[in-house]
Length: 113
Image 1 (cartoon, rainbow, N blue to C red):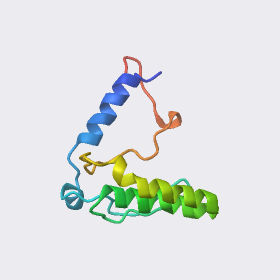
Image 2: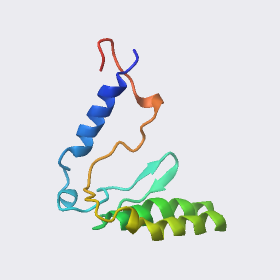
Image 3: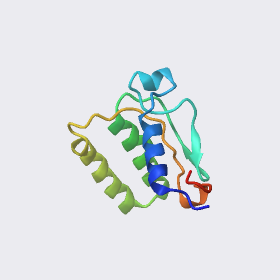
Image 4: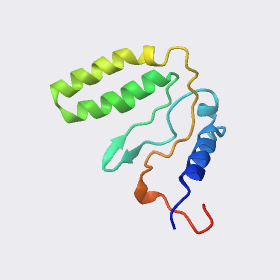
């Protein structure tokens, strides 16, 4: 059946607010115990003390560099340099996220789940 998207949002929010299972994340570090992939692309997850550093280095710049396109890389560098300002005054905490959420891997059942 068609999933209740409101319930999905509430449950995802609750998952993201749950206390992390790994000691490093509970201690405020961002990353994961293993590297993984996003599709066929490697995704490195070293424990990193700062969210801007983790995302800027291991997500944004890693993907931009894979393009080997100088224009994309330069644009990503501009975003990376601006990131500290985007998160100034924001309390970013480690959370376990569903990294591959799209309509093809969401399902529900009659009665709304």
